Image 1: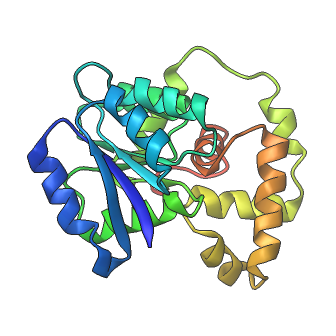
Image 2: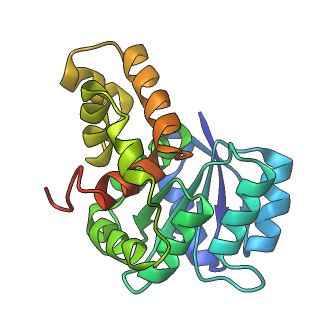
Image 3: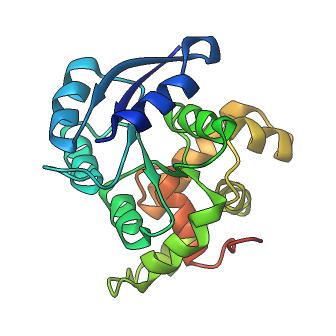
Length: 218
């Protein structure tokens, strides 16, 4: 059972998520918050497997709340919910440490898959916003001149794994694609994170797109 805390200032939105993230589907909504400030206390108290975070909220928005959650607990897993008009905010949430993004009006099955992926330590970038978010992310003038060297440090197999991470595959799916054990994939993923100096799969996905390893829609 995946424990979840819902963070959204709209009760109707939280009610909709509760119908999607129910125990028969393998989820347990253990807490809720109507703003980012309240979310900090709830997450610290409940230690959920995943936090489903709205962006636009009073007192503390989703970006600031994500940043604060990750500062308090680097292992926290945050899935940010978004609408189509929030690319700049999403890019900021990615930099703050969010593990994934999903559209609020995505099919229920996609939201469930996204929460499962984030809770398992994977990343999730909704294809409908991925390309636009990455373009906004790349528009930031801050660049890393050492990134090309770090990419060159990857072995051929690690590069294969990074490409599949960039396409949104889970460790199990990568293992099947490469015909190797899932434990082997986990080892490769850990080495990729270390060599690229990224904290999680979402950051690795951005790195892969940002440096031409994979391309939106490709």
